[in-house]
Length: 129
Image 1 (spheres, one colour):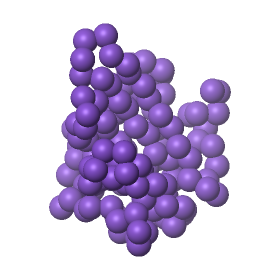
Image 2: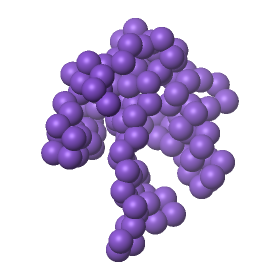
Image 3: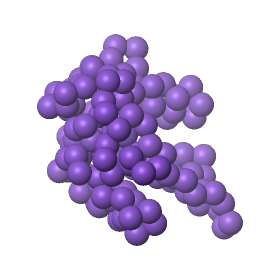
């Protein structure tokens, strides 16, 4: 079931198993604030087991393009299009957030972003970067 992230009242809903749940919830809320303020878009997430295609897509991009396999289980994911850009997010139990974006227009930009929650260690799989 989808959950609309409320950045005014930060909640750990869906992230409770993370050892840095409060910090990860704050990170997720910051993403929600960004999309609300910049695009008037409501940032909604689903449990990872309901968003398997998104989790697999982000995992495939990381593995094929950078040889990275995230060891931590995915907790939540979302995918949406806003202002001509396709965004995919996965929030991991370790406190890591990964996003993949690409512009739908031909010749547009592509990017992968990593954010670490306060208090989490840098994952071994990212230590070489």
